[in-house]
Image (cartoon, rainbow, N blue to C red):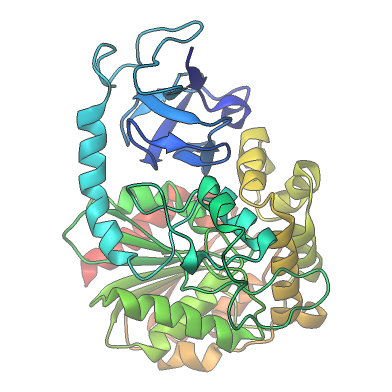
Length: 436
């Protein structure tokens, strides 16, 4: 009897539908407990769905970009590929593959779509979150781990096989008490969207990750190749001790340079806005336009309690309180949103690394980096989108912008314009891109 995989509690009590963002496995793939099966979008957030047990993916019932009922069975994990019976089994959801024929064609198309992404990410290590956690705990360098999956993705079972023979992290920097060992490797860059069109490069904010760009990413990806970077100590990127803002700029610039993009439309939020501004300042010939959403680096003020609180939050309840600081309309931070956000930061090592990073960048409740001069040096078309109800950064910092930078100051929006006013934010960004 196969195990049916659903979104479960992540979908939330009141959610009716969810969207399939990305499949990480295909029919016939062997999975271990904790391996990521797919990414879904629900309640204004995106979250990974992990395997509850080991087995083989014997059926997939929903295609990428399809909208399905929140309670729908998304796939099956059986003893082998022929194990497709399960308790309460029903026909696949509308728009999925036929119940008599597993979604082989669907997954073949998805794997073909992964080819450009594999080329983009060939220089980095691809591993499941569970594998990364296990490798970090065991002191194993992921570069010496051989992936058993045909896709080249390192899974939890690969760590177990390497734990007896793999050397510890080579050249790791000494760590402070309570901090994880520095991890090697470049930043994780996720690719989605069209094969043609001007590229879009997205940089998220502190204590977030690349998944926070949904659904903005889904709309831009219809006509552009979209690249979403995970900052150090965030998402699937390595954890390491950041000594200052210059370190972050260097890492983001390296990730951007590795993509060899021309005419990129760079978009950054909060800390990511500061990094986007620094990137445009140091790579002016590569950046076609710049959009800064509630950007850091334009003034000294920052909500220090928020920085430390959200980084250290170890329970959904405490995380929810700090997430509500970010928005004007606190109903946006509902239970599914909180669960999705907490699932991405359940690792104590990740939280410790982020806390150290926050203390370094925002010591004494102050932004330690000043990018006002860089803002005035910009030649590319630039827009700043900022909510006047921001309780994390001071929106008045935007008033330091020179006359050639467009300001969009939203009256009833907080720190996250792309979440609180997604249509307006998308419209501003799309108009800027089309004007180039």
